[in-house]
Amino acid sequence: MSGQTGTELRASDAALIQKIVQRDESALAALYDRYASLLSSLLNRILRDTQASEEILQDVFFQLWMNAAQFDPARGSLPGWLVVIARNRAISRLRRHNPSDGEELLETSVIVPVNLENAITQQQLLGRVKGALENLSTEQRAAIELAYFEGLTHSEIASRTGDPLGTVKTRIRTAVESLKRNLLS
Amino acid sequence: MNGHPTRPEDFDLYALGILEGEEKAAIESHVPTCAECAKKLAEARGRITLLAFSAPRVEPSAAVRERLMRQVHAAAQSAGVKHARREPQRAGGFFGRWWAAVLVPACILLFFVTTHLRKENERLSRELGQQQATLQRQQKQLDEALHAQALLESKDTVSVALAPQPGMPKGDVRVMYNSKMGMAMCDGWVEPAPANKSYQLWLVPKEGKPISAGLIDGGPINPWTVKLPQGMAAKAFAVTLEPEGGMPQPTGPMVLVGPVT
Image 1 (spheres, each protein chain N blue to C red):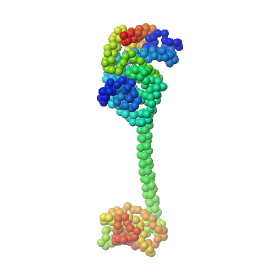
Image 2: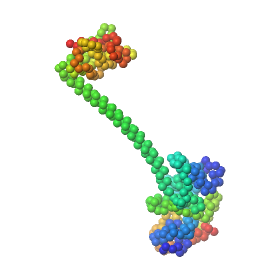
Image 3: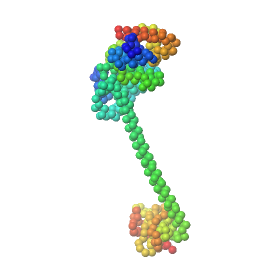
Image 4: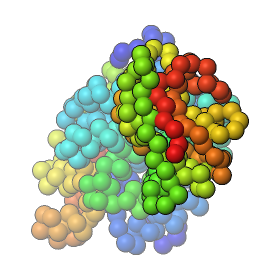
């Protein structure tokens, strides 16, 4: 958190984005300090490679610096966008895809159901997400994790687990329904 | 299918990235045309995003932040005032204009490449200049060697031994002179000249004033040739002690002298 003023720590994402548009480097540092830990955890979980994770982490925030003028807070959540972009890039690297072959998602809207701007909310969310995942069966949780952290499709999960494709589809659909209920409750 | 997805979970499954084939294509073809479904997909993305919170906590190293801020600072300096004046462009969508992320690093790269090439060009120009100077020097040495060879082989060349004068620095200098070729070659040795003084070789014609044939360094003389007026009838060659750098006409004492016979 070095180098930030109290104002920057309290400022909303939208206000910090406006400052970035005006080329305020400390505003980017504030956003980095707010979300780097979340993204770093995600990237390391996907890639299990610290160096590759840190490269993507830096690249995502640099892209934010370069494209801040195009960001419209009314259309979505900044941390949501950061997570989607970071995951997309990590999965592309993991699967040796060119990011341009997949969804670069520069035009993507992400509406997160909670406000992630303060650390307390993030902390509360940790417990809620873990609880929602624990409510799933072992097979459901494994399938969701293969999809989210490894980027596998239905048929790839079926191939990996040896289960019939129909079973995998049903398992994941019910898992998603359960997550949706528990996360929003 | 080109209508609304029949099951609400389809958006979550698409956001999870698990759909493939026709199921995936159906969503991708419909959503851009339907604001309602686009909003549902954005909400599904937001829900799926929350799964990131289940990853074990891993803090990034401080070096990442430092590298990022250095990169940002360099980009900001490179973009300069032009970047700061740019107006926000909403029409491009959530995060359009991806090319800016490519263009600025490309400009920075281009700057460094250009600087490198300019320095390389300067270095090569210097080397070329040095090589041209070396070539000219070698060409001159070759010309002198050819002239010296011609001088020594000519039957019209005479050898003049210059004897030291009493009370003057010692030396043993010989001049090979060819009047028809208008050329002389000098070798031998002479004591080092006193401070701020130079030895100067003169052709003393039978008529008229002495003609300078160049300066001689003290110590062993590296044989050298000198052009003189052709057809000049020489009476003698002499070495005088002159102010450093030589004089148009002899002013100092005669150190060595030898008659042309």
